[in-house]
Length: 291
Image (cartoon, rainbow, N blue to C red; front, side, top):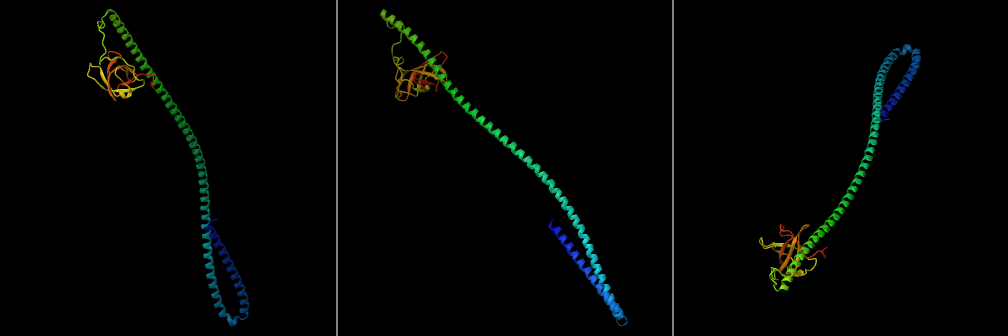
């Protein structure tokens, strides 16, 4: 029960007590009047005027008391009506509270379902992230393996082309040596057009293995001369033959004619007639010790 209801109950109790008290007083007064009336009747001639005055005054008091009682009853009825209205409002409020509790319960159920779905979505997302990371790791490993295989394939292709070119050069040198030998047996060492050893055509020497560099300058068109960024400090000497390649393409050979500590100059021999040496082409002495 609310505080307002308690106040109304207390007021009803108070009004009931007052009413009872008034009834008792009225009863007591009437009894007293009857006694006085009997006494007054025995002394009627002597006190008739005083009795009438007293009765008039008493009646006036009764009218006032009745009027006050009627006001109290009206107020009580009003309070009852207000109490009834308040009770109706309380009942409606309780119904609203019940409806709100049902709504809250439904919302709680929906919230729990949403949280469960959200947790499942997070779990699935984490699985997807882990799977994606695993795929990335596998892709990186596959890329590394592919790069390693490509590097091995490029080196093998360049080495094969270099060996083919060297084989061709060796065959050409063998033919020239055969001609020179035939001319020497006949007494004419220069009749076959052989080229003597010179600055431009030094005798071939074995280069130190695994030395790498790049072409830094290229001579005028037709000279077939090129400069590289490795020299005598790396063991390069005149007569060394270096392999020239561009990416995975075998370009030709560079026969060193002049060396300095940090640079060297050589004559380029193309692998094909249409090929030409270019700046930033890579050079290597051999693939036997290359990583």
